[in-house]
Image (cartoon, rainbow, N blue to C red):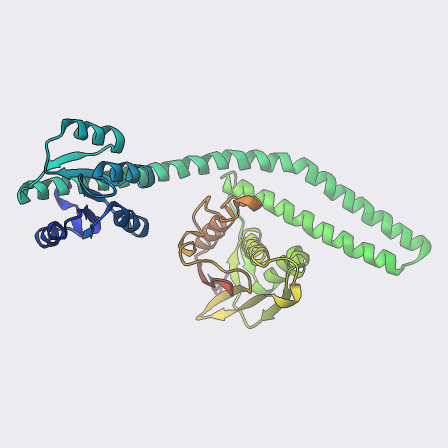
Amino acid sequence: MWHRTDTHRYPVLYVDDERNNLTVFRLVFSDEFAVRTAQSGEEALEILASEPIAVLLADQRMPGMTGITLAEKVKEAHPEVVRMIVTAFVDTRAALDAINRGEVYRFISKPWREDELRAVLRTAIDLFALGSMVGDLQLKMLRSERLASLGFATAGVSHDMKTPLGTVTLGVDRLARKLGKLEEAQGASPLTSDMHKVLADCKAAAKQLKSLIETIRVHAREQPAPTERLRPAELAESTLRLCRAEILSRAQLSFERDEAPPIVGDPVQLGQVLLNLLVNAAQSIPPGEPGRHRVRLRVGGSEGRALLQITDTGRGITPEVLPKIFDPFFTTRTDEGGTGLGLAMVREIVDRHGGTIEVQSTLDRGTTVSVFLPAAPQDA
């Protein structure tokens, strides 16, 4: 397995205060390795902070910062880097110091032999690659374990939510009946009209909560998700009712409807996709100046597919963060209670419905999220 490692994928950083030694090292080893060089420990640390390095090869006796001190600093800041020391002096105490303080992998004597050092570098890169592989597997196992725990937790949550939700639903129905009797006795008024609107919103919210419970049960694998033929504009309208107030507290809201083909899917899950994206759009906008910002929801068609598109003028997403936003448990809003599950769930639902999701963002200018869903078959 080891001879197949692509050594050019794993840069080697050689640190030596003598420029001639750096030149020779580059000439001898650049054919097989991605070589980086530095003339001091400080310069080496700058390189390590700016790009990934697999192997550090440092001369021991350098002015300012010795190789052992550099290895110790690298161990603290970049523990994954394989660290080696090169010296022209046989110093047993220095060797033990390097092993203990910097957890140095090898202690190499000068002048080094090309074939010997080449073999050592290959082995060090193999060691680094193995460590990266183990780390990735551990991360995947950790995420799987957390997702499994989440499945058990959500199953319990769905059960515990049913009773209070039933109480709320019965209470809303009872108030609606009493309001109807009040109007029969005293006639309708602007106050009773407003109360009807409030109760209608409460009913819609209770219905959405019930749907969310069913969604939780689906994610916990208790039952399959139902599907039906849906009109994207109607799905968007019903979702907007649940988050309109939150959006308007931070921005102006526009809803644009073009011709869009019908789709087939679970209305609850697809509604949750829109709800998450709309709330995220609102939360990306700083509070206090709703007149300066805008959230736009557009429904239309694109190349035979339905398009659901949300655009905001919020803070935007940095290029470094953008590729990670759909990863489970990744969030930049831990101080605001973010869990990193909302967008992961969005992508899972979109994938399950055979769709795709695209994100374009500019820092401090805003974000556009486009969800494409396949059109329903003619006989669906």
